[in-house]
Figure 1 (cartoon, rainbow, N blue to C red):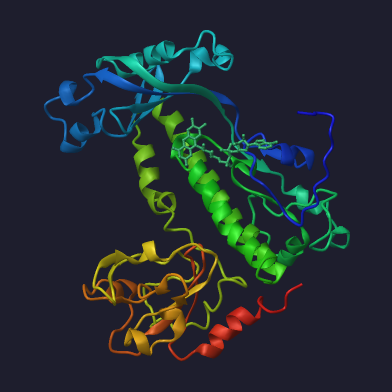
Figure 2 (spheres, rainbow, N blue to C red):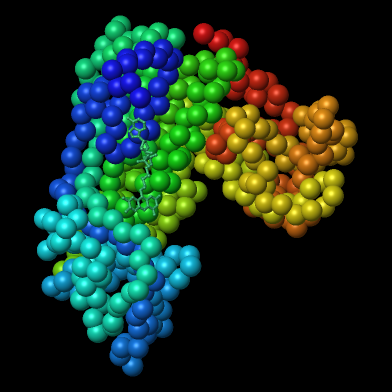
Length: 433
Ligand SMILES: Cc1cc2nc3c(=O)[nH]c(=O)nc-3n(C[C@H](O)[C@H](O)[C@H](O)COP(=O)(O)OP(=O)(O)OC[C@H]3O[C@@H](n4cnc5c(N)ncnc54)[C@H](O)[C@@H]3O)c2cc1C
């Protein structure tokens, strides 16, 4: 490899998804704000040999108490003065332990002085009177915990006149993705001229206590990539790229809030017997499962004011389309609707009321020279789950639901509202630049 070689790559857009130590972020001189102090944690996957079950609970322990003390369940255990750990049961008899290293903190990052054995000793002290040993350690590591967010002032340093138009070579720092405390309700469209997007840990770092870093990182790019593809290959207007920032920044903000609350709850639990962690997890359960993320009104989520709420009472504009068990029209085989909403970059519309398959237009049974007819695009609700679940009245003429490639609901209209559908697309399709 010739390390002296300089290669110049001309790119219309750049996605910086190079992790918490993002090289791209550094090269673009994007400053990050440190929200919390460093602390060092150990993580290890072992097959535990332990009697951590309900053995030592007092007779008056409730059923809930009994269920909590079990190595096969996810537990948060704190014991003063030793600290706290979190356990997560895994596959193949493994259990993951997250351990605040405290005394080992100084040396932990250099590894000598810190080993799986040393970590298990801490966990064992915390779990007393239960015992904990292991013979098999699958993997272990230590990691610093620090919340960081990109500085809001970043945007203030840029003047819209200085921004390059799409297609220009990247020369200066232009950033769309950020992870800020406040929403940019003003000047939203400024960001369409920027051509660098930060995604995942490059944009937001936090502790792994909520187990959300990878989830949210994947959702970031899931939100972004179909938009980029629509602009680059399908001629959609670049203004849709602004929604990456407006949709994902509030999610990152919620993630930071969740993480701060969890860290705080862990610290509290190190001092008392608060059950805060479980309350927080319950409160954020929908967010953690990804189903509560609702994108606000934008060029890609339209009609909150105009849509008739009675058309689909349980479908929320901007939220993920809930999935229900339906059956294929052609062969009656049951299928979860979400499994059929393939993420191939196409915006999909669904007629919520079914007709004879062959009476429907070609997109409902498309033909391929090699594969023949695709009859598996139309579903029936013979279990009465979908109509009820979506809140669509069976007697009325149904409705049209437009779903984005990331499965978030973009638009809802009546069966005949072709003009509304046309209007949705006309704003950003066809005026390609
Ligand atoms: C101990 C621990 C446990 C965790 N548990 C969970 C969990 O249970 N659930 C969860 O959702 N998340 C969890 N996370 C968080 C999760 O791992 C991260 O949030 C996620 O990996 C971020 O993905 P990313 O693609 O943004 O960054 P990364 O996974 O860090 O990927 C960045 C990639 O970019 C590459 N790269 C970096 N620089 C360059 C360069 N200059 N050129 C080319 N390539 C480069 C790197 O090699 C790497 O492959 C955990 C994290 C830790 C530390």
